Image 1 (cartoon, rainbow, N blue to C red):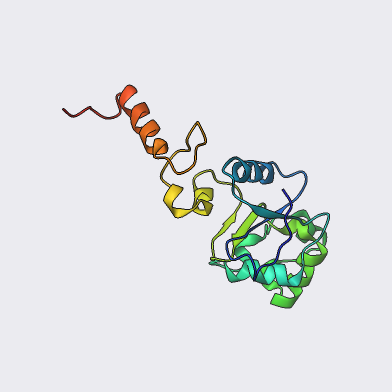
Image 2 (cartoon, rainbow, N blue to C red):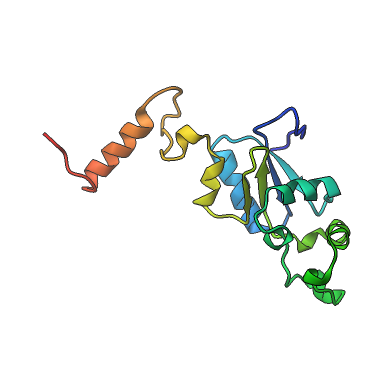
Length: 165
């Protein structure tokens, strides 16, 4: 799914930084698609990545570059570089020239939520708050309470909870 990214105009828009061969990227995109969550895909190997993109991602990290780069990347080894010894500007330029050093996928939104890599539990943070604890309705109806009822029914059938009289 491709949408045009206008960060200021899309406060809830999710950006997913991917590469074509990344299995985790495909899993993340499938999960977002399956849950009806719109996102902008940015293929960093085809379109590249900008300094503004990297800074936007870094604004949402807890540990800066450490959260988003793979220090064991082939590119760092090929150039005999140690990321911890590079300046911020050197790292920014190196990432722009060698986006393969980024861990993938990188999923980020304007609310400050960030996920690096694919984790089926952690990605739920991108669900609207009212849906995070529920399973989706199998009938895909709108505005119903059947998510809760289906989950309750399954729990009763599987004896996870007891019926009360």
